[in-house]
Image 1 (cartoon, rainbow, N blue to C red):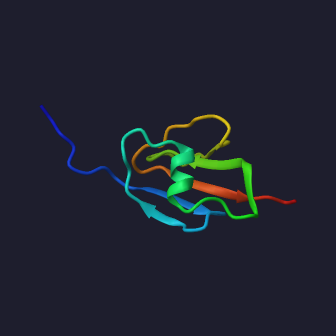
Image 2 (tube, rainbow, N blue to C red):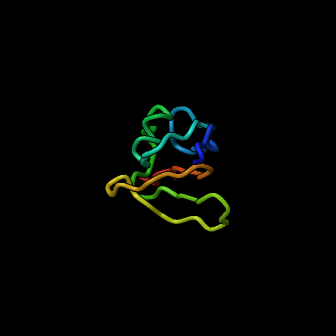
Length: 83
């Protein structure tokens, strides 16, 4: 059997209170990742969160309304609201 000693971290930046690199844990969701980064700033656009999967150059737009899984190495960018 194989056991993973440590997972790659995930990254979150943009309109969160504490941008940076955070340790991944099994079952992590987008909402959990935002909470780990201290929550959203008042300028955050909750409807335009850009998620880039590890190994991909394309970003997909997601929202906090739908539970989205975060995986090791993912990058999350919280866009700024225009209003």
